[in-house]
Amino acid sequence: MGHYDARRDVEIPAHGLGLVAIRPAGLDADSRGCLRRTADNGVAALRWTLMRDDG
Image (cartoon, rainbow, N blue to C red; front, top):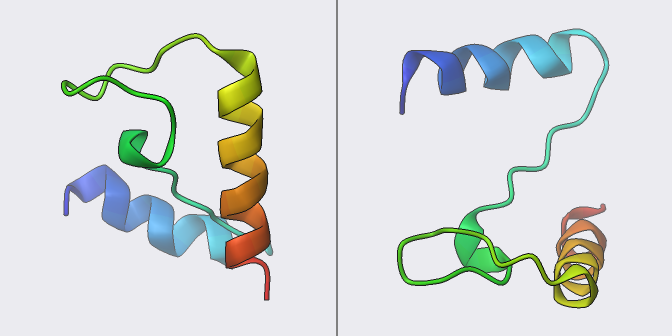
């Protein structure tokens, strides 16, 4: 884990905010991790991820 990742994981909750990390593999991405600009697939993937992590 990088320095900024570790700082993010500490600082965001310290301000009363929640953090959801979404990796390219969880979205519509190619084998290099570059996101495809497909709004419908992206929105569906985000909804699924947020519903799964809520709780």
